[in-house]
Length: 241
Image 1 (cartoon, rainbow, N blue to C red):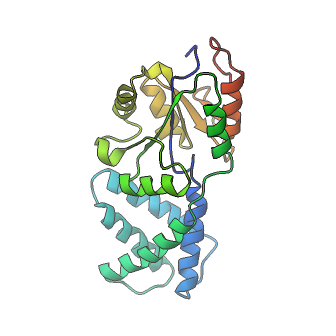
Image 2 (image 1 turned 135 degrees about the vertical axis):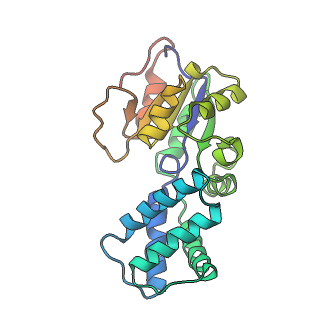
């Protein structure tokens, strides 16, 4: 890539919205509401179950509702709750969901980053690309003040990250060539490596400063870093990172 992007594509959870923080707050509150004691592994267990069963949903093994039931049932069983009916499991999950939704917040660097992008001499197109469910992801964008931002969700596109076809489909819809687009996301493989496999410039948003021995893709500790690249990179120079 030798020029500034014509399109800036961004993941949602973990990139624009603090999903992990909201989820942790919600699940601990649910345990407290039900007089169940959390362990030091409660949050990690919930995240692992979320990853496992949401992947099963993405793979077509479970419906969106079924993955919710599977997650909450396994989580509560690990904390000593008696076996629940499907209806009870969904009721528990709704309690978690209400807490989760009330905790939706953008990361502190998101709005300043988008302001910096908008202030560029020729601002790129900005859009969200997510593997989440269309309806819920749109609600998240609205809650964090980004409801007007274009969004592409795998639930409606019929293909998901890291499949190159998803990135190519989005670029085609926006009218840009893949090499004219940057993709920013917090998942190294799904977002950064996946987008690069489609010809985009992938950027791994590595907020946790996790070690990556690869030379590519590019990585940044914050959106502030990426804003600086955009502001200081000339039209014929790629940011080094």
